[in-house]
Image 1 (spheres, rainbow, N blue to C red):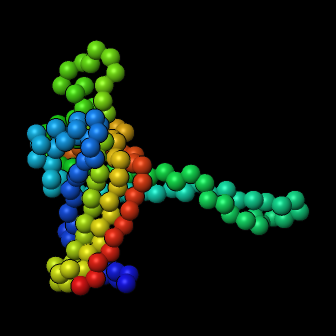
Image 2 (image 1 turned 90 degrees about the horizontal axis):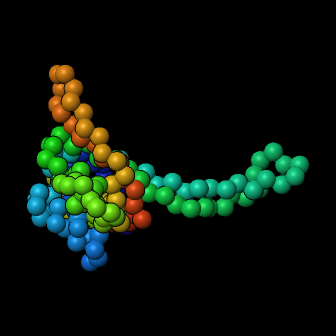
Length: 165
């Protein structure tokens, strides 16, 4: 049965996990060092899934006669008000603490976004983004607001799981 509950951001939690690989091991080292499960002080998460649709236009027709799905791209961003180097290390791996001599491993992890309405325990929606790699990191120091960091990411694929109470 499809989940039809309404959620707020305050119903959410974010956790990370890794797959067994060199990139996963690199991410696990950062997760362990900074206790990134759950990921704290997050104010905004966006996930975007693009399907590169290709319309087919026949000669003499103004509207497409067929829409064909193309490549699927998963991307998103995270805003965080807790600057401790964890997200920068998730982008750069070992290169965040010293200049690498050559190539270096880019950490890869899975990001789990879970929403559960406290008024309806057991009713939840979970979006898991697999094979996440950070694309860029931004650090903002405003004059009279909270210091924030923002990362943009790309991922291999996304899955969703709904649970009804």
